[in-house]
Length: 103
Image 1: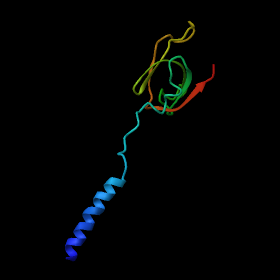
Image 2: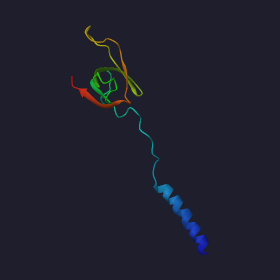
Image 3: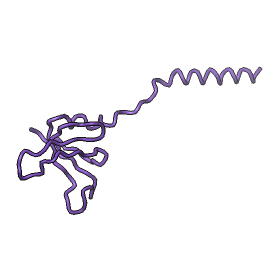
Image 4: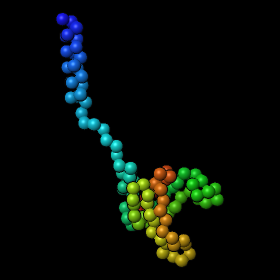
């Protein structure tokens, strides 16, 4: 009798634990951490890991956001002829800080 009663309590405990556990856990989207600063048209400073661009270059980029796709952000081309006018894509995996510049 004791053996059957123990098995019953074990089954009831497992069912009760499953019922009380709540909803399952889901992962957050990879870009949700950056959504507030990385809207098209925002000017931001992307700070990268040290020596991402080599030891002779700085570890940050000033960028006006043109587009965000997954874990990548594209900066608009510079408006002046004195700066590089290429449109650059940067990986957010290497970004350690994003600072939004006020307009």
